[in-house]
Amino acid sequence: MRFALKISVCTVLIVAVLFAAFGHALIARSFSSALSFRVREAEAAYSALASSLEAEISVLNVYYQSTGPRMLREVLDRSAKAANLGDAACALYDESRRLLVATAEGFPDKLTYAELTEKRFVYSLIRSEKATLLDTAACVPIGMDRYFLSVRFPADDLFAVRRGEVAAFVSLHLVTVAVCIGAMLLISYFVSRPVRTLTRATKLIEEGQYDVRADVKSLDEIGDLAISFNAMAGAIEQKVTALEGYAKQQKDFVANFSHELKTPMTSIIGYADMLRSAELDEEDAFMASNFIFSEGKRLEALSLKLMDLVVLDKNEFELTRGYARRVLGHVMAVVTPMLEQHGLTLITSIEQYQILYEKDLLLTLITNLIDNARKASEPGKTIELTGRKQEGRYRITVTDHGIGIPEEELNRITEAFFMVDKSRSRAQHGAGLGLAIGNKIAQLHGSELHFESKVGEGTSVWFDLPLPKDKRGKEASHEEVDPQG
Image 1 (spheres, rainbow, N blue to C red):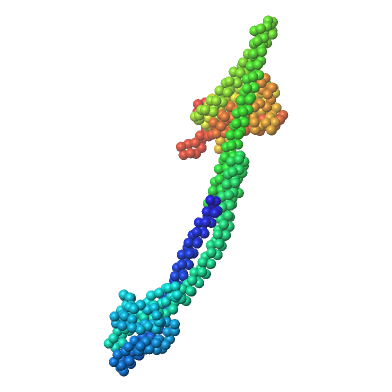
Image 2: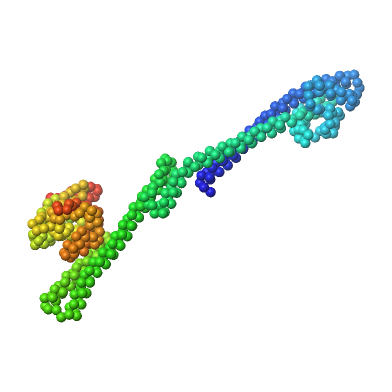
């Protein structure tokens, strides 16, 4: 059953039951009030009849020694007319409650009211196929004798009124239920509309449209559910997009890795087969051997870098405190001979701060960035290495003034095996893994590699390192002089 229909059916059932119970109680109260009023009228008429009957029988007892049924019938008729009983019938019973006379048929030969006493007025409703009567009875003491008087008043009008009230209530009940059904269907349709919106969004997401969001603006619990749903959908979209990107990277990785292996292996096999099957002069044999050696070194470098990627993915490294100038001074000592050999100059500007880092990984990262700057620079150019505190972290920047990187390539240069200039990279034994490894090292330090570059002007690469905190969680003070030199 649909949610809107459930709400409608439950509400209509509750309204119908409550309305029926209220109507029943109201009609019963109305009938009880009408009956009580009729009983009071009957009691007043009964009192008048009893008074008239007492006077008539008292007179008869004075003039006659005894009264027969005929005389009592005449007295009863005169008293009934004097009391204006109208269509009411009456009967007189003796002290033993046996019938003496009656103005109409239908009275029992003996009164059966067990609760009837001298001072009590009793009544009951008698219903038959022909009529409904209000049967009343009470004791009438006359002189030394006791009589019981029973009067039956017509009560058909009471039940006619009640039947009319029931019919009117049933009609009103049906109209109310019909209006309630229509109103609840309409209300539940609008109330459940956000749920239907969520359902449609769910089905669209199930079909692969992960950018779909539920447009629900209500301020109730369903609105809160829609906000949570949209947040969940956004998280799913991000995860799926990341997985799709990761799958694409894996696919590209496998394709590029296969290509990187295939090219040198083909050359190595070809030159090895030439050395094995042909007689070459010394110069050609040396060229073939040198090519095999060169391609073998490239495969060795490729395998080592792939191992670095695997290690960085599967291990956690502990960051230790150290001084920035000492770390970067070590880098300068390593790269300066290489740069001088290629006619390049390294310019440094390093602020002295304590930093958190993993020594071997950080040295590998900065050395790799400077080596990439060397490959992109012509002799006579400068490479700049700077370190300074910025936005609560320590930023290290490597800047060159070389060939630059096209803007459309900047977002991909940290992908494994991606090379901006493939021929230039392979000529320098590059495999397109250096920046991928460097970015993972930066991530281990809570940062990423960021690039700014213009073709023909150069490239700037930077990343941040965390600063140590003291026991109170505040930034540790730095020292301008390294106590260890």
